[in-house]
Image (cartoon, rainbow, N blue to C red):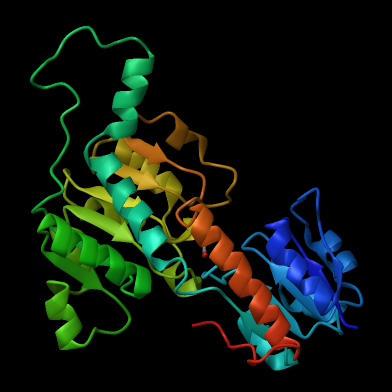
Length: 320
Ligand code: DGY
């Protein structure tokens, strides 16, 4: 029987399905494994159930010659060196589709919270500062009818565009590696623009692009100066897509109005400057965190591991 590592705690009733096929080593204390711990735990393992917290790189692969499959419980897989895995013949899988709508719901909610100053208003109330209604109190910007900008128009980007276009009457502009088919653009009321136009015209800019060396700091100090001073920026992609220090500066100087951030450079640590600012809504990487979706992600990752190691009906499929 092959041995597999379940690198982080996950729903026990779902992960337990692996036990019918493999000898399972799990991590009930849910420690985030550093590289040395990961290498130690992967010794003799044919497969790994991972989350975005474990980094599988060439060094890990070299130290774990028996590894044949890495199945990530996440749609993002920037924690895995896919090229190095492919070169070694290690199958890599992710969990697309099952989290698209839940993540889009959250991205939209975060954008609305930033635009309408919801977290800031709640803190104001909790501090006991509300003494009277005032016409100018905590006024934000409208979402309905405003221009929705999307950087990265994959499944989640399109699901956010659909919410904006059909639910909130928003004209949608987007920038992406490739352009959508005309019928999809027209269904989403979406217009393809270059990045400069996206920055210049968006009232609410949402980042949904995958993280890679090419998208590192896609939004930095220069890009922020090109945005409207009334604009909001929402990041549900990956922390490294935004230069958080530059964003904190821009928010402080009110070069943009507000931000909603679910992901951070170096998370779970945050740039301390962000914590000082009233005009940013901060959440701990929970865009996919509904019970149903997290269960679906765990279940798909388990199915992928069973299939990838040849124990299931389908072969493991590469990330899409
Ligand atoms: C994903 O699926 O990539 C999420 O960011 C992890 O929760």
